[in-house]
Amino acid sequence: MSIGLMTEIEAVNAIISVAGDAPVTSLSGDYEQAEIARRILSKISRDEQTKGLWFNEVNDLLISQNINGEINLPASTISAEAQGDNGELVQRGLRMFNRASNTYTINADVYINLIELLEWELLPQSFRAYVVAKSKEEYNNEYFGSQEVARTVERAIAETYIVMRTEDLKSKDINILNNVRSRNIAFSNRRLGR
Picture 1 (tube, helix red, strand yellow):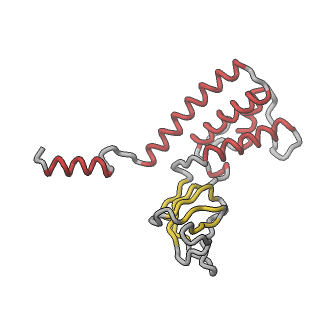
Picture 2 (spheres, one colour):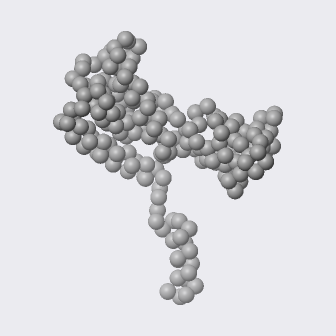
Picture 3 (spheres, rainbow, N blue to C red):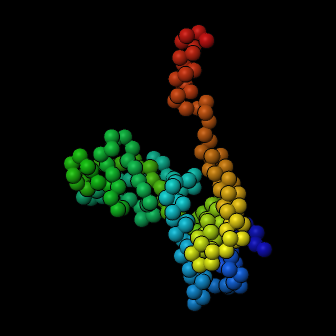
């Protein structure tokens, strides 16, 4: 049993264990089921990261224009949104496009909020556990269809999702009293002498 973060090979072995397969010792082998499990793991990780979580959201990233006045996004970008542009700038591939002038030429540095696709080694443990549980479900559904495994995996998905979402909420420090609507209500109540 390992201590610390789940490695990618441990994740693949957890997925193929759904079918009772013996663990692999390398990800570079020719065992087809391990390759299938690795593809599923990668797909589920990408799909879940697309939603944006505490560990892969980058806010207020200043991106300088290139010599052509264009804004090129990092290669790991899943989605990007420019700040304060009234929706004129949109992501197209790995560049920002100006819809108002119908061009990629922005001629300005831009602050961007983006969601990045991170490699397995950069993911937090709670997310890794959730992705493995979801991958087990897909692997079972596509290749075996065991109802017993499905029930066990459903519980694991629910449990790991709660842990992951709790970590997401804690890291975002969401506070009902620290938002615009609450401040407006408090200001209104002060004004009315309540």
